[in-house]
Image (tube, rainbow, N blue to C red):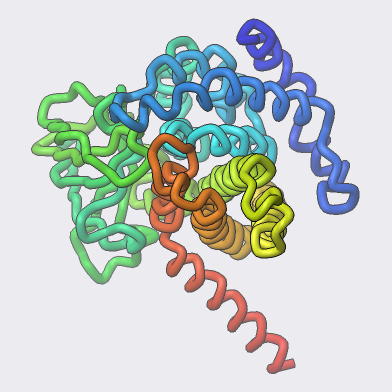
Length: 417
């Protein structure tokens, strides 16, 4: 199986382009290209054979799923949006969402590892110099290396402008000091994308106050914390990290000095559809598990699927999946094409899909009854894994803030005409 996936990863970039996808119009005929269908099918087989049978043991032990990640790397799944000029597939966001829905179906913990690995690379793809791209992106295609996205701090989660880490100019370098928390891939990353304040003036607008840097994990002054014990997605390596007088050369600045906040916001715009895709995959898994169980379990002489109370739950779960999937794909299309409404749709997709993943997982447990509450069955893990989808990448509350501001602005504009 893996050999066929490797062949696919080598040819996919030549069979598919964002321009071809745009020409077809996803929301005219809803058709995927042949290459996208091939990727979807290959990812499904990978998930079925490599992730689903092994996710439980990694959840139980909390160990990093190196075996799965290495095989995903062989298939070209771990750096799929790296430009072709550096050896990547250069996939557009909608195509990546197809991949991440499948990965989320198998295990959103594995999906988070891969997504954050991509997230750390995104600033380099968006604004990195040729030197940084060649130094940090190309090696990740050759070997199964990981990167981490070090932005979140104890006082700066959804409020990115609250980042307190500082980087002070010192000749042809910056001296970086500060701490980050909840950093995915922290203990296994080769390097970090780090956001720090470079303008000490608190009145300076966020768009000019922060700068993005690439920092090697083995650099002097970098201290990695202990692995956190989380409720779900336990295979994902989450830790705190401290930077103490870390010297960062000027050539490791991503984009322009002072332009880091904009880069981070653009990176998050591209991440939300992927979180939504993973949430949709988890919702589909919950439906499939609950549906299979409902066809087998019998009460009062009938399959529980034939009881209206259960069949209506399955119907609601199916509607949740379909609506989340449609909004996820629309948001990916809008963001990829840099439309002004991209952040609006990506916030809707992330919020709705994450909320529905939690609802579907909870309903799956209800259909399983007492068995659903037991670790011998797969659905309790789905609920534990689903919760973080409403928190990371911008909480569901923050997504509602974004959506409400867009709605109010639109209503104000229409009433003033």
